[in-house]
Every structure is written in structure tokens, then in C-alpha cells.
Image (cartoon, rainbow, N blue to C red; front, side, top):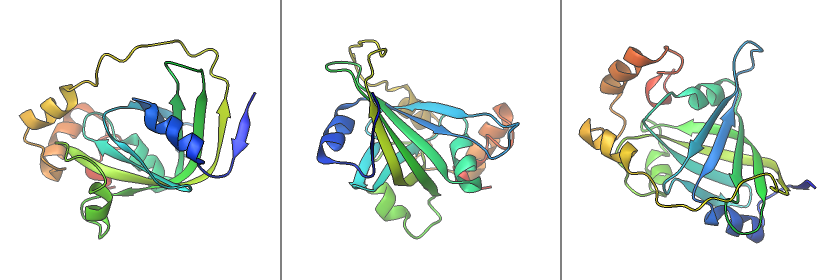
Length: 185
């Protein structure tokens, strides 16, 4: 059974904070584009207030979410209980990207640990949300967070988003739309 809500309650916040990973979904307005769905881990999610959330976007693969948010702002975040009582919680949001060239960068990135290879911060206004049963979500035990992404970024000396270096790397393996470095279009 689905239970809608308007803002994040203390109970929702406690559930979100217990999850070791979350999922981010976005899509372009074009019917020919595809939905982008990405898992996120590490210590990269924060609740600013009951109607605002943020996550740290680290360099690693494509940058489709930033392109979609720039185009239309639509963002869905999903959290699943992989242990304990089953539950799925979705946040339907309007998001925007904050890059290091923007005035609010220091405050936005300051909410998170100083990971190597920070690309951008996504800030999202929660429009609505819902919880559902999660009965079909399997039980998993977290062994640990992976350290490959921070180690990879460190090996390339990506202390923060270094635009020319990332543009070269992203352009070599991704399309221009996906490889837009640091959320810059």
C-alpha cells in the first residue's frame, strides 16, 4: 500500500539516514531520450529541512542527471530497506545543480566529507513523496562502502572537478551530452 506525503517527517528522515545507498532517476523532456537511473553510496546524502534535500555528485561515469536537471529539473530519489522491516521511500523533486563556479558552492559542498573527485552538488526541493511496502526488495547485508571511486579520482589527482582534465577523459569515452564536465553545458 502506497502512502503519500508532502514533506519529510522525522520518521522518514530516520529511515533515509539508515540506508547505505539510494537511487537517483531523471529523464529528458524528449520522448526519444531515456530515463537515467543511478545508484549512489558513500556519505553523499543530506536532508537540509523537511522540504529540501541535497546530494554530492562524484566524478565517475556519465553526467546525465545534471543535463536533465538543467533541461527540466525533474528528479526522483528512492531509498529501499535492504535489512529489517521492508519499505521503499520515494521523493519526487525539482532539482538543480550547484557547481564550483557558483556563489553557493562553498556552503553546498561544505555539508559533505571532502571526497576526492567532487563534480557537483545537487539540491532538490521535495514536491511530494510516498512510501510503499517493499515486500519484493531482497534482504542484503552491507559488507562495506566501496573505496574504488575515491581511489580512482585520487589516482587522477581530481581533488575537485578539474574541467579540462575531465572534459578530455569524459569526451574520450562518453557522448558530449553525457560527458559535460562539472554540469556545464
